[in-house]
Length: 186
Image 1 (cartoon, helix red, strand yellow):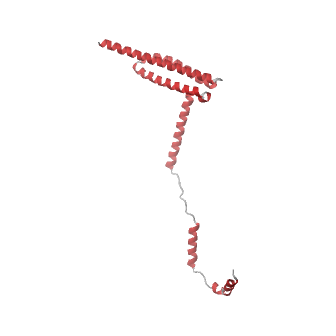
Image 2: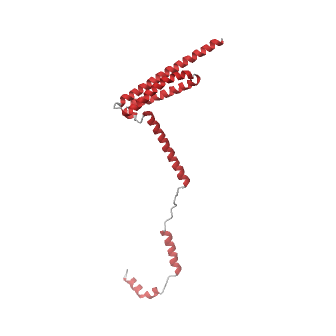
Image 3: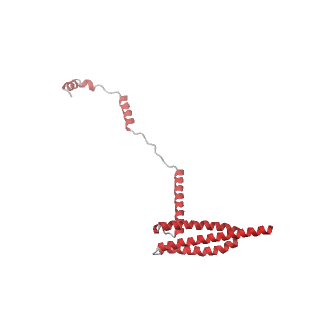
């Protein structure tokens, strides 16, 4: 501070000390300080029980669907990743398996109209299906998995050919039956 200011304060000290601030002044200062110091309270978000239950149900449902897909894949390939053995063969196996499934479905529709014929055909299919299941089980432990996979594909190809022949026979049988019915009505 400057010397003159210090001297002024020193000379007039008694006049400064006899003045006291009013009581409300400090209260006002405290109010202003308390508003500035206290930050805004953040709203705490809580999850409702309904939200938590819906979330848990969704998670369980997704996990369940994933597990079912996993089990179906395990059942089809015997727990062996066919693409890891040979991606091209895996594609062929998938193609022929879907083809056989489609043809079996067609044959099953025929079973409704002619169950005896279907019964005869299903015996052959059961033998081939049994062989395919054996190959699937052998695939797990075989040292030459690619060879077994080729045999599985060949089995599916034969099943597809047999199913095609059976469907053609049924179609010819139905045509013959229709012609006989037409000849009888004439």
